[in-house]
Structure formats: structure tokens, C-alpha cells
Length: 342
Image (cartoon, rainbow, N blue to C red; front, side, top):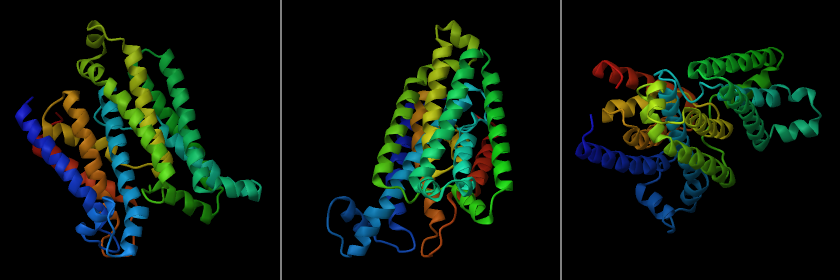
């Protein structure tokens, strides 16, 4: 189904909703800041309270931008994987990137006790953990790319990714068995995901990685549409399948790997948002799905972040728990209502 007028209306509503949610996200928290004050601070004006301006510029704005980047990146990488493997249950972490990142962080956090105190202090810093996560996901990426050049069957790559994930999870399990309660607690907090505490320099690096991944994804729209009818059809249409598959895997790896490094392994978003976009827009055309998934991912991530902040309260819930608690019932309701994947 392709209704340009309907799509234009939906995109307009979605874009306006995203802008409103961005302001709501910055406004709400343990201290509620009026919309007018948020707008004034973001447009370079002087807020009526210096504390409000400090909270907006130094804490809530970076977190809102991170939520948008994470939502966009994971949603698009999930769409790429579901189309490439023709599997509605495929997500951004199906290639084992999340497990590789977790292994890198586990080595740093759970193995820090056997390292010299100076070295462990450096590695346990936020930058050290990001570096460890990046190295872990990059290692798995290189292995997957190496394997993808040798395997013709796309489903075999999916199985290899799952095996990498199982292997790294087993190693993490061994490390946790020999770790102290304090180390386990720190690793558990990292695995729950965190959108806050990113400096502006970290957000800049994350933005560059996400934009690069999105650019590669944009280049893959035509191949993705061709792949809807299978690999053989795509090849008969003149598609260089191996090259297209390599770009899709590389785009997913950049998106999922960089996001996991800076925000931790965020669940649900990459798996469910592409289905929400398909069900709402009622199309399989990736030109429409790319932009709809992009906007839905950012909007849903902002909603989850607002809920996790527990407006009016001092506590903040783990973002991973919120994405799954809110997301799973919504997807089930949509699927029951539509009765099938589009």
C-alpha cells in the first residue's frame, strides 16, 4: 500500500510529535522546568533561574540528543537486519556485536582486580569502558566481515553471528563467576543501559558514527527493496549482492557498535520499531520505511527516557527495563490488531 497523501500527513504528525517529545523530555525530571524556560535556554536566551539553565544545557539536553541518536541508530540497524535475513525476529545485535561489547567491558570491570591499581583506574574510567566496549564490538565486526566474505549463504552468517554471541556470553559467564559483588554490580549497571553522563565530546563522536551508519543505510535502500523478493531475484535485477550485503552489515555494525559503546546494550528498540513503522505506514517500501523508522525510533526512545526519569521523583529507572516494559505490550497490541506483519 502506497498512499502519498496519507504518508505526508503521517510524516508531518510524526515530525511534530518528535519535536514536542524533545521539549517534554528536557522539561520533565526530578525538577519540572516550564516549556517557556526550556525554549529560552535552547535558543540562547537567559533563563529566569540559573539552576534551570545549568540543568538544561549540561544534563538534559545531552541526554535528549543521546536518546534521539540511540533511537534512530538502533531502529535503522534493526530494519536492515530484518530485511537482509528476511527474519522478523532479527535485531541490531543479531551479529553478536552486543556480546562482543559486553565481553570487552567484562574484561575491564570483572578483570580489573588482577591488574595494577594505576592501570585498573584508567580502564575503569568512563573512557576506558567505552574503549573496551568499542574494541569488543569491533573485534566481532571484523570476524563477521571476514566470515561473510567466505560464506555465500546469508542465513549462515546469521548462525555465525549467533555463535559469536553464545561464545562471548559464555566467557562473560566465566568472568562473572569469579568476580566480587562490587564488580558484578558495576557490570550489571552498565548492561542496563544509560543515556546520561555523556560529555559533549562523546556525543560528537557518537553523532559522527551514527550519521555515517545512517548514510550507508540510505545507500542501501534500493538493494533492500530488491532483497524483499529474495536473493535470487535481487541478483537477476543486476544487484551486486555481496557488495550490498557487506555495506548493510557494515552500516549495522557501526550503528549498533558505537551505540553500545556509549549507551550500553539497549533492548527492544531495534527489534520492535521497524515493525511499528511497517504497521502504521502499511508499506514494505524502504524509501518510506527508512524515514518512518528513523522518526519512530527517536520518538519512542524519548518517551522511554521520560518514563525512566520518573518525573517529580528523585529516582531514575534503568532505560533497558523501560524500553521492554513499554515496548513489548505495544507491539503485541499492534500485531493482534493487524493480525500479521506487513
